[in-house]
Length: 139
Image: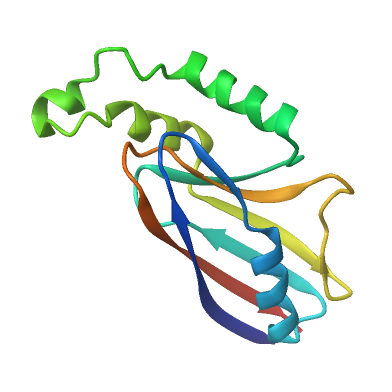
């Protein structure tokens, strides 16, 4: 069995930035030589998430709009009172979507659907450089 730990970095603009990171993850998987197992994808921090989506402009906009309806930016958030950073909404959004994914690897490829890509969602109210941790495990 093999375990490979790696990181990818992504620069974001914040404010519900959705970035397709599938290609970077495929590159890391190819470099791992794992043929069957799984890949765990984790974004540290409390204002970003990872998920899968069909990465096309209509669905991307639909997801942004759905997230805005679930945790509107302009609501009152106690977090903003305590820290004064105005990003209470981003913490709630990240908690709803979640910080990690686990995807099976079969015959050297992630078992993603035909139209399924892996995306980073950065909800913070300022640009960041996000470091996503990958753990690739298998044989």
